[in-house]
Length: 164
Image (cartoon, helix red, strand yellow):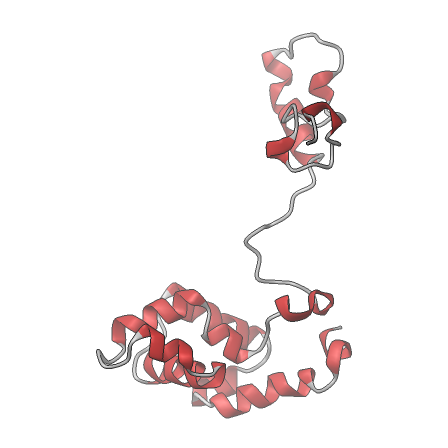
């Protein structure tokens, strides 16, 4: 068992003896910060903190199977899956949906949310925005999922060099 005193400053915040990092100016000097200096002190403290987005979906190829990319991954994002089930036929259970492979799931979502309906939700607009930013506006306008898949495949075929 490790005592709190043995934990390094690199330990997760909830395991540290103090939530204030040792490099903080708040620990030095012991004098109260005047109200007139508070904005500068807080700005300095926030700027000095290393942050990690634990909810990110943007991981590099070096993260192996955690690096999910491509149109099928975008289309099967959990917000779009949830939105799809609002429109899905009652006969399609979540279990049956998740038994399908990724491409089949993506095809259903594309058809329901991008072909049968206008893609106006925030999640759908995010997909459209991403595709347009990648120069695929013609493919989006034509609703050509095969061409969009071919675009992504051209990068995948180059391996990690395709991500550079």
